[in-house]
View 1 (cartoon, rainbow, N blue to C red):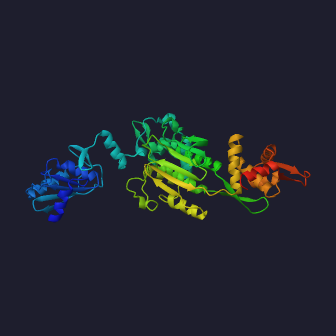
View 2: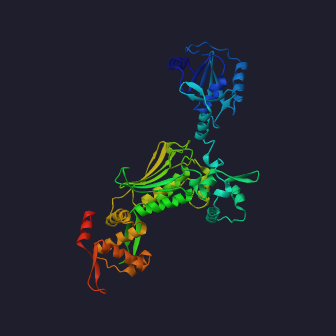
View 3: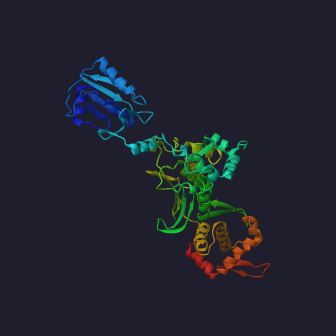
Length: 470
């Protein structure tokens, strides 16, 4: 330090990373406050009026300062620098937070070191990852009442683990339970995966799926809440997405087709899995949302970027908020490799010729998939899902079949129930019901004889296609 630097420091005054002290009184509080924050400097020999009162810098003083740092828990790392009669104590940001001293836990807030109250300590521990929701034993979960052995067996099957031990021992080996006084106590990771009905334990673990009309959250066309267990929630969310997103078709012959989703299902699945694995489960006022708008799909979870991951590092480095959950999903084959989900989603979108996802992170993390403008088949499929599915109780694969049948008929493709049934992997009777539905709605009619005739659009059918922009 130079004389000019000291004058500038005195002029600027105390701040988030700078503290003035005349002596070593309560020095340990400033040390742990800086260690719990971003580090800083303590200038001994400066009074509150920003005047250099000076301090006798001796080996005894330097040893005392070092002892104060060593007596903090954990030990605070400091470096000492002398400038004339001012001793500068450089305090490094701690790597093993939180730090405390005999006076308690302190944190730097602006130019002051403030003592943390109980709830503030809890929030600090959570923010630093010292306390994880997934590791905490759930007192609400009663093993004999709430545990579902079927879900454990399915997990073991997917993970390639032979079930040779009784369930309690298996859960302990998986790291999701412990034994105390003969009882099996399950932690929250085990609850999330193996609860008979997760809703009996927690209400905030819901995955909510919603379909909106338009591009705003105004008119809800369909909504589902899933909260049996987080694996089932992922699967049910994917069913919801498949029901309400469009399919296009690549024809390889008169009747053979290849289904092409408007957004790759595997990319959406990665995003939903990321949302349930990486969400902040301490946040009880929000849940995972899977939302479909006319122009986009948004998948959102509480909790922004985990501490230690910078925005510019997102997608290249992996920091896990719930590492146990991530490991269990990996072991069961629900995710391929740890930390590769974002890259895999980007690869799938690029391969499909679609724009990359957009990511937003504040207190929430959001993955946004832009929906391509609908093609004929897709537009018909969505319209039928909305008009037929919601108005007449038709949804899912049947809505897709109805849209496809109408598109083929409008394109002059000869349609027979048996040929289409083989292509769609359903019974001929199911296709006959689909054709009957279109006839009852007045969209198609039969022309010609039973053997040589074919289905054609009616005026009403053509009007509908014109309305849809065909």
